[in-house]
Picture 1 (cartoon, rainbow, N blue to C red):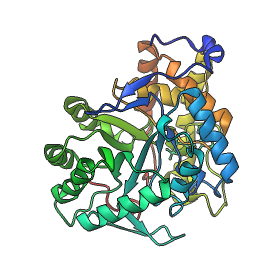
Picture 2: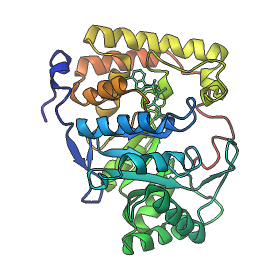
Picture 3: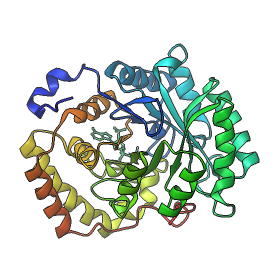
Picture 4: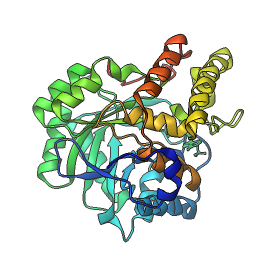
Length: 343
Ligand code: ATR
């Protein structure tokens, strides 16, 4: 699809977003997906079932069919919400879910598990919650470093043979893990945090994914709201961003200055900072499919519209120049949150 200038975007908001082939598969996904996590946990209280269903139905209307969830989001609440929204529309959706982060209900602390027995049990539990007999894309949420990756992938490959899973992915893998896993069974997606403020995947992961034909799925492409007008809810216990180093004190003030500089470019361009953030991520590679999260229909519409915003070479250079003038302060997770991030 030829990208339109933003001035024409508003008129096109109800046109369907283009589809892309998910890596090493026949699955067609929208060029921008929907991260569903925030509907259940982490950025505030869970939304009501009716509000969640309205949002998911609006996504489908806009052509957004790629829904990202995980078994641990709200201890199953997120998968159940998707099941409810997709009750009569399963065939219209591509469901990506994940296993491997084991938490007690309501607690942030976690263990990582990728043993074959656990993989199978987690898959069956997700299928039950999702009220479906197949998962389109099944991710290892975090890599279990205590066993060879081949054991985890081997069991996932058996789930593919049995028809319970269509494609396999890994979240936050290292380069070495991707190579070993892909040799065991072709990967369809790698999901890691990636945005103008989190550039780690540029150190080899984006190019490796492209070389192996694996889609790269950036989560937190708006840097959890830091690259938007909305950011976090200070003092709200359910908003876990209050515990993240990037959202605290001087680090936060510093990071908001960067966001403001980028926001000036968005204003010149006639789009929002969140939209610029998504368009920038998509401009980094053909096979990059971001999954911004939102609880609001107006933000979903704006984010979907970002698929039609082209960034010029001059704008990319201007953004690169701003980013080179600053250092993002504060780690992206606490040490607990870094468990299983495979480096
Ligand atoms: P994640 O992948 O972790 O969900 P993200 O997509 O980078 O993170 O950012 C999600 C945050 O950005 C949410 O707090 C969301 O808030 P709402 O639920 O209020 O929308 C916010 N967000 C997403 N899209 C936005 C937009 N277009 N404008 C402003 N804020 C937005």
